Image (cartoon, rainbow, N blue to C red; front, side):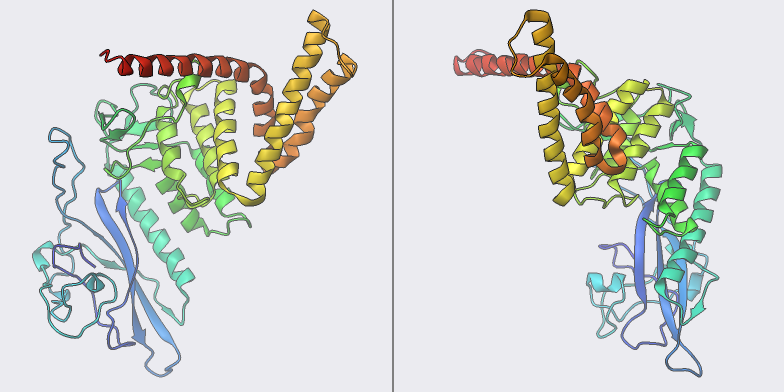
Amino acid sequence: MGIMGDFVVWFIDDSTRTTRRFGDYLTCRFAPTTRKLSAYAVWCEAHSTDTTMIIYHPYFAPFGKPLRRPREFPDAQVVGLDYSAGMLGEAFRRVGAIKGSSRGIAGGDRSGGGPYRIRPDRAPAVEEIDCAHVGADLASIDQCVARRRLDMADSAHEVRAWTPWRVATSSGFTVDDPDGNVGIIQLDQKNFWVTNAFRFTDEEIERELIAKLMSDDNGKSEAEARCAVDDARTFTPSLENPTDMASIPRFMRWFENSYGAHTLAAIIHDELIVNEPNGGLLGSDTLSDQFFREMMRVAGVPWLKRWIMWAAVALRSRFAAGGTRRLSVIVWLLLATLGIASFVSATGSWLFGWGQLVEPWLLMLFAATLPFASSVLWGRQFGASLVAAGAALWILPAALFAMFGYGAYQLLERGARKLGLS
C-alpha cells in the first residue's frame, strides 16, 4: 500500500501462492475518528500439503501523511493526516521491483526496477488480523476485518473530543470543535465547504438501522452493518464534497430555509444519496431517506415539517431509481393532480355555485379516497404518499404563487441588465 506520488510502497510479506503479485488491496477509506487513511488487504499463502487450498492473511493498516492547506482556502483549518509510528519496522521490505506506476499500490508486477522505496521510520501501523482461513472465501474475511475496523473505531471515539452542536445541544449531533461550531466556507453562490467533522448519535436509531441492514433484503453481517451505520452517521470534510445545505428551491423558501435545525441532517443525507441509485453507504436510498427523517426528529424539527421534507426526498429517490418506481411516481402525480382538481371543483361548487357535471359530494368523496388508493404506488413508503397528497392541497397553491412572483422578478432583472442598469 502507499500514496500515489510519494514513491513509497509498504507490504508485509511475500505471497507464496503467486510469483508476480504481492497480494490484493481490498479497500481504503478515510477514518474520520483518527484522521488517517485506513485500509485492509490480504496476502495468500500456499498450503503446505494441499495445493488446492489457500491460506488467506488479511491485515488492517491505518496510515497517512500531512495534508497541505489548499491554495483556495489559505485561512482554513484543514484536517491533517499523520503517519503512525511503525510497528513492524524492518519487517517492511523495500519494493525495488516495481516500476513507477500505480500498479505497485495493489498487487503490482515485480519485473524490473523502479523508484519506489521503503520508509521504515514512517511506516504505517499494520496489524495482521487473527482470522486467517484455510480455503476461506473473501466474504468471511470481510466480516472479520469489519469487526476489527469497528473495534478500532470504537476506541478512537472514546479518546476524541466531540462537543454538542451549539445550535441544538440535544439534537444528537456532536461536532469536532471545542465550542460545538460547524465552520463553513462559501465556495460560490450556491455551495459551501464544511471545515470540520460532525456525527449523529442515537442508540435506538442506530440499532434500527443495523437491524434493517441485517434483514433478508440487505443480508449484511452484524459487523458489516455496524460499520456501515458508523460511516453513514459521520460526516468528514473534503474539498470533493461541497454542500448547498438543504436542497430547497428558492420559491419554497417561505416554507423552510436551506439551513436550520435540519442543516446537519441534510448534509449527511446528501452524502448518503449518490448519483447511482442505492449506491450510498447504507446501500438503500429508501433507508437513507428514513434516516434523514429520524435525524430531523431528534434535532427538533416539527412533526409535519419533517414528514413533508421526508416525502419530498422520498419522491426524488423513487423517481431517480428509474424503471417501475419512476413510472409509479408519474402515475401518482397524475392521480394527485386529478384529486386536487376534484377537491377544488367541489369546493367551488359549494362556495361559489360553479356548475358541475357530477354532484359535488361525489367529487369530494373521490378526492378524499384517492390519496389512500394511490398510496400503494409508493410501496413501503405509503406514509410519504399520504403526507405529500395532504400537504399538496395547501403547499402547491402557495408554491405556484411564489414561483410566479420569483419568475416575474427574474424577468425584471433580465430587462434591467439589457437596459444597462447596474
